Length: 301
Image (cartoon, rainbow, N blue to C red; front, side, top):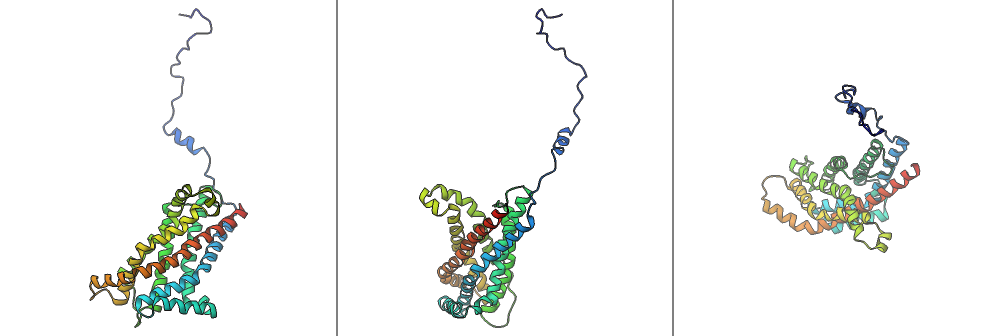
């Protein structure tokens, strides 16, 4: 039957004229969207900027960190008090700076923090390359934590083994025990997490609670970069002291009550010393590394 109103005819169904969609056609369409774009422009110069900023930041903070680390080691082993050790080293830094700047402790500290900063920077550059992000893109994901922790822990274990042999309790050098390695590893994981992963998450929270005038002078990210690594030392210092005690006095023949007494005795002063070393290391050093890297990459972008 035809409609009485021209132009309003209902369309007749077409039987069997539409081609069937093949299975997997959506996947094929997705594959035709084009290859993934990587941001590889100036990649060599960007990686060089990562290395320059990391090594520069590490070199600035290494003298003070080496002095404090030596003092903590000598205080734990009984070679000297923390105060006397730091005083002697600071005097040498002022009057005979070459004795500090060309020393093995200084080189070890540069290795640890330079390697850690460069690893974190390089991962950011790799991420910005693969995800086609701006040069200055900074990540705060699990991969960055894993890479930075692996670099820092591996290099720090080398440094700690050298330090305990240089400033330990004396006697013939002996290998660092597995429990000491485990305690040093947990200590460093906490510090790395607080230094690289917490600030990007905590910074915006601090910024929202800062006055406009204060935020013009210092960002929440900068505040978090100083506060988070310092605060975690209160928790990680007992692990550090116990690891040193296990090395200095051995793993057998001493009760845990005796070990706890040593840890409790040195907890406050060593926590303060480690906060004083971590603020320049991952606080000041982290800010310098980030700002120098940003400045270098901004010129390339």
